[in-house]
Length: 320
Length: 212
Image 1 (cartoon, each protein chain N blue to C red):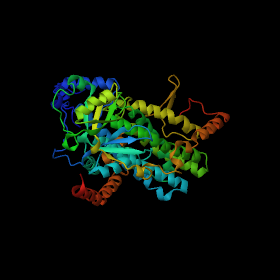
Image 2 (image 1 turned 135 degrees about the vertical axis):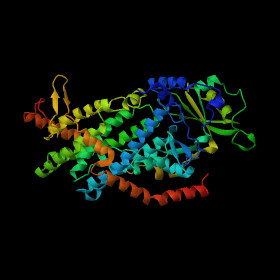
Image 3 (image 1 turned 120 degrees about the horizontal axis):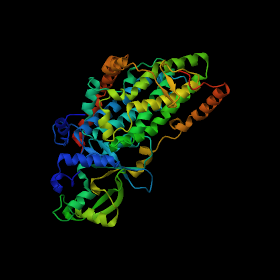
Image 4 (image 1 turned 90 degrees about the horizontal axis):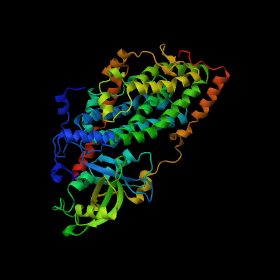
């Protein structure tokens, strides 16, 4: 764009004034748009968050994609195909939002493929049987929806608009998992056993999606100050626990948390201690599937090189 | 909280200019979409693409994959003349020579499409068209023609816009009928849970003090 740069208008502001004006805009609930002045830390935090979110969507296709060919019936297969396709689309929305902040697609993908960035650690766990599709839809997408609903109000325009679209599409991801959990938990003895086992394996990875405890989260303060997050990790996690635990009990299942208790005074469920050693091990790349997920992504990237070369060649020859 | 010098160092911003050697990206195109016939186009976002035609296809995948649209317009970012309300007050239009000449040959009046944002939380929405010799004149005419308390105005020469072909609307944007399982209402979980809770209550239920 042109017509509004400092040189063209002749206004000069110090960075201190700019920061004050920026924080006033955030306080008023205004959206920050591409091209608006923003502190470098705001830009860097958002590039980190949005690109990791994008990587998570794309890597998240892998544990589910493995079961498309082994769905129990045609309806389940169509549903799973649509869900996985959505996740590819969500990755696209998010890579585009990160690009508006100056991040390049090449840098973001290099960081993912060569291990210098992270994606949601929940996707480093294997999907062992079809019941995992139910548990993933219900627990993992359920947790994601809580997080994304909050982010739909974030101060950065392109990210908040991407979240609104993603939330609308994600609701069926949650509902289809929920439907399967209800069906299997009230089904044959084998189905009940399978769904309880899947819940046992996916409960803690889903709980860890909300990130470290607030006291251990170095990024939260500035993200809340600048309107990117409006709830802390622990607040969201507690909302999740109180949303899911009553339903788990109603369906005759148990939560794999010996420390879970009901606080009668506050009228809420309180979860037991989280195994953070396992969390950090998985985040740092030592989970059950980290290496497998990244090598799948690298193969996809290398196999697709000819498409990128063709587009670039066409643009050079014919582009305007 | 960071120490003060580091905090102020973090305020140094950078802009990735198209000429910067690190910028290997395709040019940025702004995307405007029309949700339904008769409604104005709104600013959806932007995409990187090698040319206008690819921009239309990429924008379709990014912004219109599920929701329906009837049309999309693309424009290269460098073609948008933008002014905020504060900037217009600080430096009124028409006081200096124009920044860019008319897009029409011979300096004749060209058509400009006008977009404006009226609320903090909104996006730029298409207002209509004016004919002018240059973008600043177009903005002056637009402010008279569309009396709005706009926060931001965008002025775009009509010739710079790449527009989707109306004949291809169905092919590009209509969603496939029959994919009912994409709607959350397709899953009767509410009814199923109500029945499960009723059975739980009838069976004596679980006390809330029970440990999980």
